[in-house]
Length: 345
Image 1 (tube, one colour):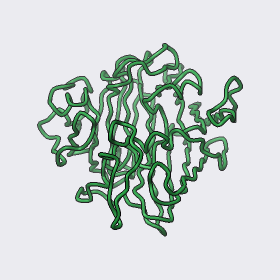
Image 2 (cartoon, rainbow, N blue to C red):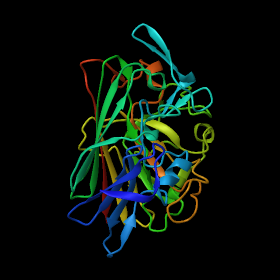
Image 3 (cartoon, rainbow, N blue to C red):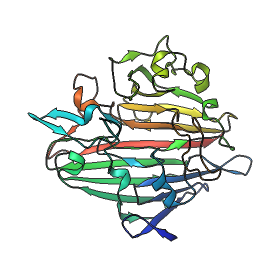
């Protein structure tokens, strides 16, 4: 473990940075604040090393961005319409932080907390967070553990586990932004494939406003690889949110099959995403402009792509959707696994 010596986190304690390495020379770094994935450096075929993630120059810079770069988000990732939901015969009002709506768990969600390091080794680090009853308006004492493990095939496995003493909707994900090109140019030049036949339309605030829609015959059809730019802003569903920022209901029930694959513009680095989650949120970085950057001052819009494994947004208000129940009940355990495999081609 390394400790950032020049500044301290909002709780007055040092930044705790953990570095994982594998046999092939890949290096991944994380910090306990927000259980954040900071960096993924991949050895390339030509002997260079390529950074696959967007990130900030220092840990303190992560406090001055609203893009959730690499952060673990919860209790409920994505949006809850009007910050309210009902279940178990009750209605809850949770903390709003995007107009009247809640985004990524609220103004003091899991991305704004120090996670405790439970254990660490050369290839893995495990974090834990205790979220008390009433936290951001949610019911129940929720105990969350998160394991990052770096495999020798350049797979970063993220494993989530949670328990509660009161029924509560739970939806945890990582908000990494990928740019697989050496110069980190416009990520819309990347090629993408999504194993999904339906996506969820949303309004300008990212709130679902229609039933799941077939991707066939639309700009949302990524069943065969195509560049993100190929049909960018070609329809009203994209234009509502300035690009892609939509959940795709995945076809994959077999976690050995990729839910998504992403290729750098030069074709030399490939990302494969495997997940047990029912959906992926594909976000083309439409609002990244001005986010503090690792090397260039600030990022531009569309400079990174997020592929967030999760339940569909606003699921507590839509039990009719064809996915598992997002409510975690006492005596049960929330478990979700996502694997990001980076392959030099």
